[in-house]
Amino acid sequence: MDFPLMDIEPIWLSLQLAGVTVVILLALGTPIAWWLAQTQSRSRVVVEALVALPLVLPPTVLGFYLLILLGPHGWVGGPVQALTGSALSFSFAGLVLASTLYSLPFVVQPLHSAFESIGKNPMETAQSLGASRLDAFFSVITPLARRGYLTAMVLGFAHTLGEFGVVLMVGGNIPGKTKVISIEIYDRVEVLEYAQAHILSAGLLIFSFLVLVMVYSVNRRLPMQVT
Amino acid sequence: MDLLEAKFKMNYPEFNLDVELNLPAKGVTVVFGPSGSGKTTLLRCLSGLEKAPSGYLKIAGQVWQDDGIFIPIQERKIGLVFQESRLFPHLSIQDNLLYGYQRTQPAERNLQLDEVVQVLNLEALLKRRPEKLSGGERQRVAIGRALLTSPKLLLMDEPLASLDMKLKAEIIPFIKRIENEFKTPIVYVTHSMNEVLQLVDTIVILKSGKVENIGSVEEVFSDVGLREAVGDEQLGAVLETSVSEHDEEYGLTRLDFMGQVLNVPRQNIPVGQSLRVHIHSKDVSLSTAPPAGATSVLNILRAKVDKVGVLDPKGYSVDIELDAGRPILATITRKSLANLNLQPGQPIYAHIKAIKMVHDLEDL
Image 1 (tube, each protein chain N blue to C red):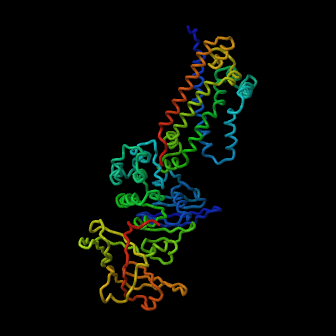
Image 2 (cartoon, helix red, strand yellow):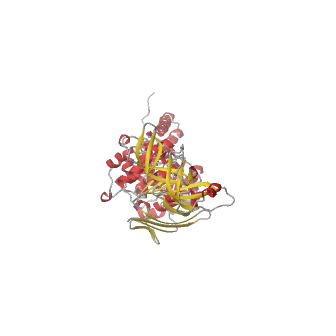
């Protein structure tokens, strides 16, 4: 069996999208998760629900509203178009924004539970030893939350890699710009090119499986907290 | 002299704290009281972990809390040791020890790693990880870590509560050494009488969020008025003695107490070293003259009657306060009191039936 020539562009685009999204999500998810773990505020449940919303919504719903929001006449897309000349819909930047929202719960929730299980004591202890809150966060809390961070990164990355509906709605299907693996697979199946669809699908399946095996085995080996 | 002045007021529906303290900022001050008496809250207020709505705190000339002033915990020169060691699991023992040291201005570092490692005997542990240590070792590291911030005050919140008797006995000498060698004043919160007696210079008794008494351990433990707070089993004399000789033939150790001699079972303590002993008030009986014949009681102290306690017509016993250079308390029956006809100032012989070394005392 000879392999048809593969277009690696969708693969490369998917990796880029997932990478950029994870970096943004870590920066964004850390303060949200920390706030959720610390606050006594009643608005906490609202924020928790908002963060979890992408878990239950059909991707098309999220995609639909994002399309309107990011388009040339949308609240976000309009001003962006006025500034840069093009709206965010059907662009890589638009995809990043959509993926960030879509994968937010996959990053915030592991971090939130990691911060919660760490509790107040390590922060108090570090402060009593002269560390500022920020210093204590990076020197104590972050290393203690590394399991949570690893899980958050992998889930965020893998979930972004696998998204379909939102990407299709917001990004369309523009080769080299918004055409990611999952859409490429759909395209191949549509035109009955099963061999190529197989290669991409099996590749994604094996990749996802290996990553999850790695995460679970690393998590098992990281030391637990001592009192 | 350096002083610790503190005044905290907190009013919560379920708990009130209303405490005013003026203490010498040296030696070991023990805050003692049952759970719920507010001792941990007091410690959290001193450390800055908790902010009392109304409070004043001044230590060694520096105001840490007053109206409109609240120095945050990380800027206070305090060391905190908790009931659990709270070592950072991701750091080696050496890095745990250095965590606070590295965050202390070089000019303010009075203590160096080597000294602390030596005094607390941590050399062998430095390269190890916290989870490989025993509970007692971890607590020693936690104490060392707090000391290496060169604190003006070391606050300890039941640091030995989670350890068994053997480990406690292992750590207490280290706490004494800290006080001797580094001169760091210690405020130590506990509900364990055993720890109190071994360590304490000044004792603060808290009850329902209020200071019930402050004094030296000798005063507090022989204060009949504190019977309830100190505990019936503990009320009595705490005497500072020194080991004067060992009697190998009879397996005894002789202690010198203000020129008088006390015999106790052979102690493994070098001659000349001090030893605190506790004499329960019910273990003291009295006679107005030295025993005429032979007696099996080895320890008889000469003393004077200081005060005869209040007679409760319904009770059968009465507390007699004696002066043997230091206060000693005897609880005798009313019948005996009538027989003896004691008057203040009268010389008396106190027969001591049992002496406990404070390091042998069991927990409450």
